[in-house]
Length: 162
Image 1 (tube, rainbow, N blue to C red):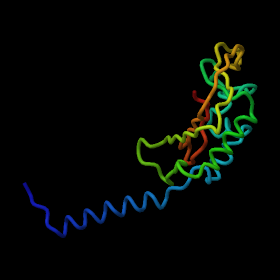
Image 2 (image 1 turned 30 degrees about the vertical axis):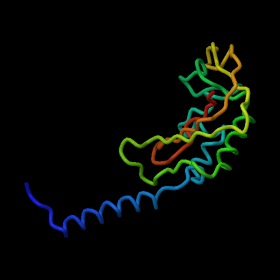
Image 3 (image 1 turned 120 degrees about the vertical axis):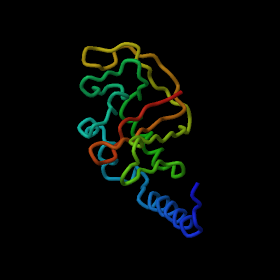
């Protein structure tokens, strides 16, 4: 077995430290990225590759998707309130690296709502994927999922959780 010299060990430690520092220096709070800001807008999300409308009652989900078996915000205003809480949260916000590592193409941020809020669980859908029959549920948190899509980070989805 070959021994590693002190010089080689120091070089290896320096390289690892540099990789860790550079990864952190190129990562940004996901919410500050223009591509995330644009894709967080309901009207832009599907075109950006997201599935946000799949979790908002009254919105039509992307083609070939459905609200069936999904948790839903009661309306778009409730989603916007959750986004504002996530941005205001400060601590615990997800960081999106400029170039994600292999297998790191998705990041999740969870926020606790200030108080439990009524949401829906879709029990049956229409032909266009919109929810037809929903059951109430009280959500205490919202999950935001950021994805690296076509060279940019986007808000892929957001959904309420009990």
